[in-house]
Image 1: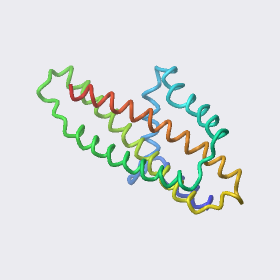
Image 2: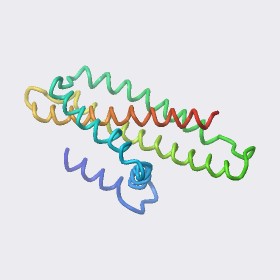
Image 3: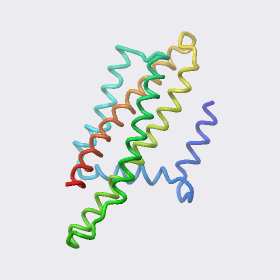
Image 4: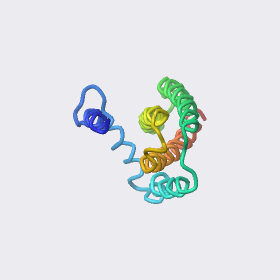
Length: 172
């Protein structure tokens, strides 16, 4: 299983791919935080610390992974609905300067949505795998995966807040 996961990841994150360019999506998304180091800490470092703390207190069980799958599936549908709304945003009624700014915000928001969708799909795949694993046999794996899932969920929620904020600015 780890070998197949590695090969799939290698294929998805390969540069200059004409099919799926997740590498480009992740690089462009991280570029949003280039001039905002504190925001980078808030969005990516603090959630890691928090997820480690949560996993010390509570390791997710099979039922929680099933619930995570349902909730994240709803997030994916919400994200794709937002993507369809913002891609149809007409910026022609604004001045040239505002048009460029609106197009930039739409591009950044679209990229954030694709980023969140990729994270969501990964969370769903791992959650489905975790529903089939014997937790008594693989306690350390369960703790490690719990840290990763908690971290990705926190990152996902923070990025959804970012998307909602940008969505509000686009619609106003």
